[in-house]
Image 1: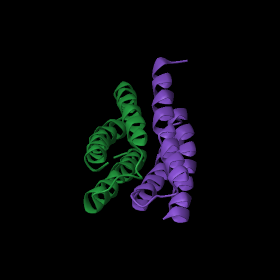
Image 2 (image 1 turned 90 degrees about the horizontal axis):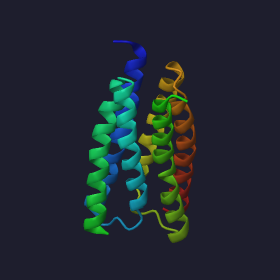
Image 3 (image 1 turned 60 degrees about the vertical axis):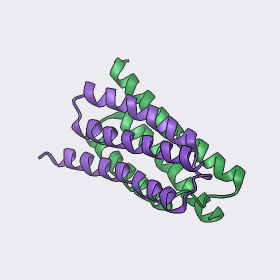
Image 4 (image 1 turned 90 degrees about the vertical axis):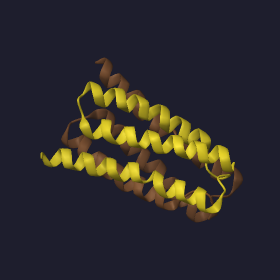
Length: 84
Length: 84
């Protein structure tokens, strides 16, 4: 595998996995007051466009990680709605 | 300008600008308890790798927005440290 593709996959793994500790924190503390819903809405909208971009450029790193990240963002928005 | 480059620039604008409402919220409420520091640390590390990836692929959308996003992530980490 091309080294640069590997860097892209690792980059995406980090930015994608970053949402997990935020989701876990909300679940643990049952509180999301300080978390900005607008942050995750804008992030989700941007990820949808990154998906279009990645598909158009046949860029596996961008498509894979933005798909997973989008799912995690929607999860955090649901947790924000549940825990306020 | 190639339409796909435009989509990439718009995608990056959205995911980058998403950090602004989170920073504003912490400044306004003087509270960041629910915000996960690990989220922004992992995000920052990932953005550094996206920068390497973007430079290697000469992808202006990725380089531009990850540079700005990295700055905003570091700002939010500083606010998290200041407001706990």
